[in-house]
Image (cartoon, rainbow, N blue to C red):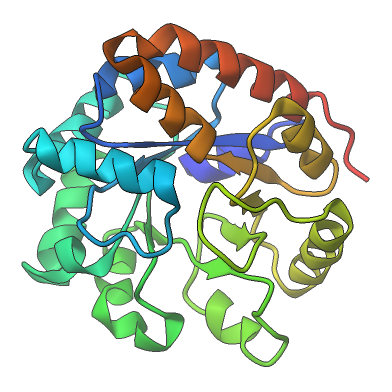
Length: 261
């Protein structure tokens, strides 16, 4: 079994936690997420124009880039994490420029060397899979795709083609961290997606509290939380790990105890 299949075959939904690489003491922050109960880690690659992200993650990107974080630093953070946590799935999430600038094969090899399990590239649509997908799949790395409220039945098969690991459902038609989707719309969307794929379906964008996460976990295979965690890093800096662990533990308790409908 892969790390993904292990994470999503547990008797409870998975908690997926996101923070930006190079923002604060990333190693300590990642360790806090794991200690709090995160089942999957998403590590954001800082980028100058994160167009899918709201103010919290935009600010995290700027803090990281301002501190001089490079792509090499991101891979070193990932490799160090893999040494400390050999069983937790690790996903890189970011944008195409740093992923393809040196060639997709270079990027895929770097992911392999760092122990990365999956990649979410926000701005390469499935119709342009050749830009990165084959190189990742050749190395056994999962290209994780995004489905949104506007992904209709006609396009969904193309989103799923070549995707693996899990399917990330973006629950709002907007940027990260601001809007919150209605529970009924999430339930309808997850049911539609699960009818079309055997991949686990994780729901994110706008999930901030244990109460929200617990409700979504009743119908989804995973719940993704990002902005609320990133805001803690922005507010507390190097003192963030204790606060991150506290929120993650609350989220994990809610997600892991949810009874799926």
